[in-house]
Image 1 (cartoon, rainbow, N blue to C red):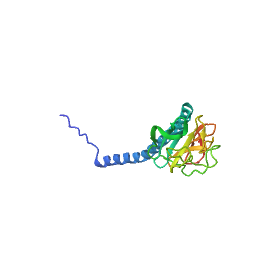
Image 2 (image 1 turned 90 degrees about the horizontal axis):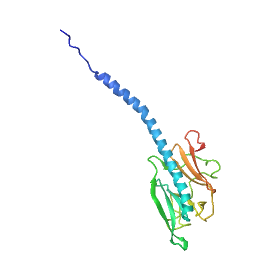
Image 3 (image 1 turned 120 degrees about the vertical axis):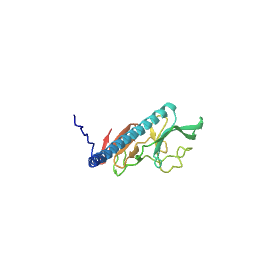
Image 4 (image 1 turned 30 degrees about the vertical axis):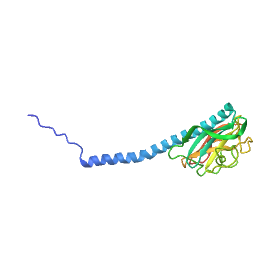
Length: 205
């Protein structure tokens, strides 16, 4: 007569050891995965900012009017706006009309420069976001707090509040460690930069 074979399962101690080992592995892997995911989100947001700036430049030239990229530094959103005159014969009377809606930055990403003290090479004399925006019904007055605007004239050239061509515009976003900057010269040339959290040096993308 054949003997009955016993197949013992795992003991409670073995199960606990397995759970503990799994917890240790997950504890090591999750922070790394989160850092990688945040890096992808930051890079994607930076590319979105650069794309909207390039689109604003093209829309200005194609519609023969001013456009701007407006960043809301408090709400962490940005958008494209087109100047629309109330009367086509009077170009200075009208309003900024939103084109496409607000675009939010990803979770954990904000407008800012972290601890950077120098701008990317040959871009700005002093690092900082572009000047504040004017109100929705003004071209050159009533600056709106906690905003940054890059304004293009009808030829797609970045201009200042007086309507004069200007360089040194920039929008910076960060995850508090890595900083991405999108700059535009008076030429106008849109460039994207990144500064990591180790050396703080700027690298052209």
